[in-house]
Length: 336
Image (cartoon, rainbow, N blue to C red; front, side, top):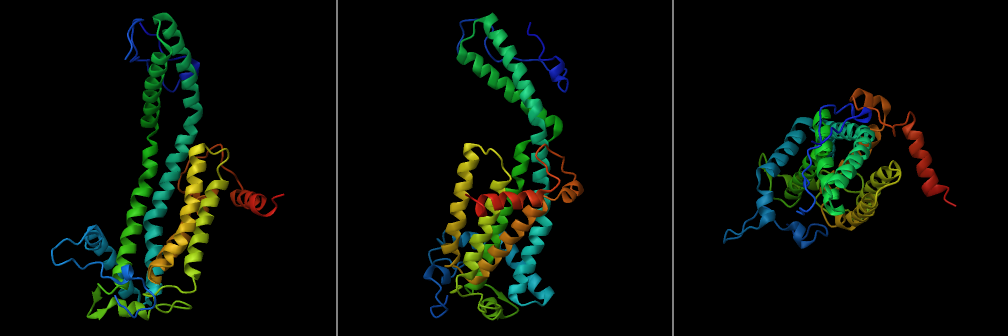
C-alpha cells in the first residue's frame, strides 16, 4: 500500500494520498472620395452587403448586435451629456474602463496574488512528491520516464487541488482579456461605422456630426490626423504600459521576455496603423490606453490594493511609485 504524502511539510493537505497512475509492477511502460486623405478601405461602407449577399466577415461584424450596442451606447452618451463628439468619446471610454475593466483588473490582481502566495507550498509539495516517487520507483523498478510521468501527473493533480481549495485557478485571471479585447474591437468598429457614414441619429448623419466634433489640431474626427500627434501619443502610451510591466518583474522567464519584446513591437506597429484610420478611432484608442496606464499605476497603490482586498505578497512594496521611478531612472536615464 502506498504511503501518505504527509509529514510536517504538507499539513494543508493532511488527508491526501498519492494515487499513482504509474505502474505497480516493474515491466509495464505506457465614403467619401473628398474626405481628407482617408484610404479607400477606410471610407468604404462597412455595413453595406453586396448584391449577392456575400458581405464578408467584417460586414457581418459591423452589423452584429454587440457593435450595434456600442453604437447605441455612444449615441446615448452623446445625447445625454450634450458634449461635442470628442468629449462623448472620452466620457464613454472612461465610463467603460472605470466600470468594467478596472474591477476585472482588480480581480485579476487578487487571483494572481493568491497564486503567488501558494508558490512556497507548491515547492514544498514538489520536494516531498519527488522523494516519494523516487522511493516508489526504486521499489517497483520504474524507468526514469515512467517515474517522471508519474511525478508530473500527481503534481498536476495536487496543484489543481490547491487552486480549488483557495479558489484561485490562474485561468480566472484571464477574464479581463476575454472582456477587454472584444469591447475594444466593438467600440472601434462602431466608431468606424460612424466615421464612414453608415449610421444616423434623429435624421442627421453621424458622420457629419463627427466632421465638426473634433478639437484642437483634429477638428474633423472623420479625417486622418495629418500631424501624427494622436498616433505617436498612442504608441508612447502603450510603450509606457509595457515598460511598467517589465520593470515590476524581476527575473522574467524566457516566455515573459519574448512577450515583452512582442508587445513593444505591437506598440510601435500601432503608430502607422493609427495614422491610417479616422481620428475618432485613434482618440478612443489613446484614451483607452491612457486609462489602462492609469489603471496599472492605481493597482500598485497599497491603499487601493487593501481596499480591493488583494492579498499581500512577498514582492509588494510600501513605496511602489518610488521604486518604479528608481527602476525607470536606472534603466533609461542613468545607464552607464
